Length: 275
Image (tube, rainbow, N blue to C red; front, side, top):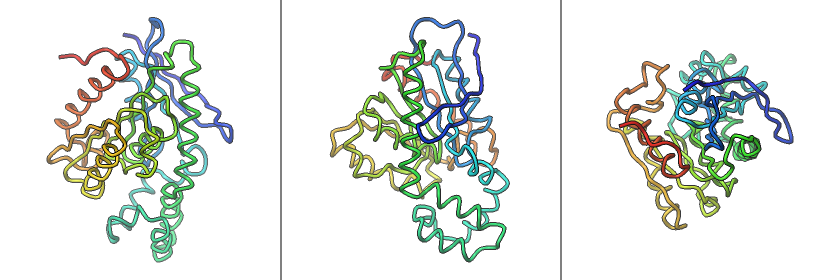
């Protein structure tokens, strides 16, 4: 199958997002669609590649850059590596508490402070709510494409994007399915607003994220919502990202991709995964 990929801009009502669109060609009627949500690095070639993988399977896929603008310039791989050196000296829960993170950033070398402050900005409740609204605009854009079946729309995200995939499910009642790859839980009080079916995929060697999954499972069950999860032994955070050799875990990534395709086949009516 031929895949067409192109860069575009998606208006959200308050700003425009850079994005990458991948779709199968030739089009065969209305197709299911997937929003691919990036890691903390912003939109990069890995997310574009994932979008193309979906297009090769018959999905229309769009990968928006929620960090369009100043944040993208700050949250580069080199800068994030500096931030990770600081985080290595701090308790793992620090990144989940913007107030504590701001206090910690003030104690770090001057060249690291803007990066750590950017981490704090993207993890704040108000910023994440804003990203959720941006993603809702992205799903509305997809539903407006003539080749997309508006009832067959899902999302998938990785790390930061995993959390945002779950967040999108809390604000888009028409979303049919959402996949969380090693992302933080959505606000648990928002879980009753979720109508999508959720699939969570996690690494056993990523306790800061994986240890919180039972809380999401309990909240989803209490709300009568569908949540399936799988934890991969020996897999670290970002085990799916084949551009990060230190984290990539091939066997887990391959199995996770099969699970994703099977999940979207069932929930979005996409093609079944190859045997």
